[in-house]
Length: 339
Image (cartoon, rainbow, N blue to C red):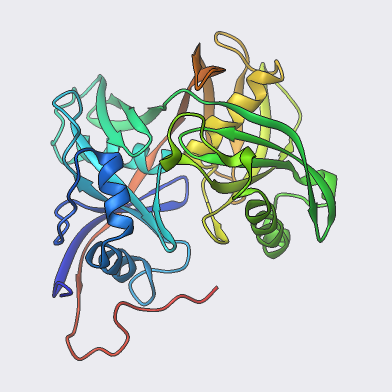
């Protein structure tokens, strides 16, 4: 049964929306956040609520949000199930940044007027941290410290309608296929928006069911979540500078530089020797001109591979508080998507 009303707190992180549902009016059972996600994928009630908040007329094809759920244990402040128009994702960096800001804004996690506080969050890919920085009682930045990230495959040839492309596959809480946009004659800008979406979808579906998209330890994390089409902007002032657009799920476009995608890019750039712990950082721009800063905090191993512990710094802003109402006579429930 569809709830008659649902309350949300809405944020954007570098232009990408994040709709927070603090008290989901449906059951989201499970032994862990990762397990809750798997069960939500098979839950008609969870899927209906996701669609209600994501589809038009209450959302749009590129909407994003999360249901708050209990943390796995007392070591975290909260858990979250991330969702978009096509389902529930394993990771979301921009959402983690928004949740850190929200947790401090609402007093759920006490924070100093000047200084920083860690908001620890369980997500389907593991335990992450939103380190919220404050000055004069205002949030000034949020560091998203992610799970270890690493390269899965290098220079995988993929045939596309624009010719063959070389793809590097990397994990940053979700699996991404990375493509240099310039190799197929594209620039990462709004003028090429539709062409970037088309190529991103081609690459994702070409690799999604291959061995290159298999997570080495947890099959629940397998599959290509998105394609990152990137271009170099010229290194300057000790920074690697790139612009990207991440085309995720089935043709959705991240307006931000993509938090977990930035972690995957840090893993690739570290593998290439372009960034390192204590070394150059990544200035990562989005298709709308917003930016994140990506830093390698440490090196480690994960999944039998060399890995980095990535940190992505950005900021989220509240855009509204909403109570969405469902008219029981409305024939367009849960809604529709136009792409």
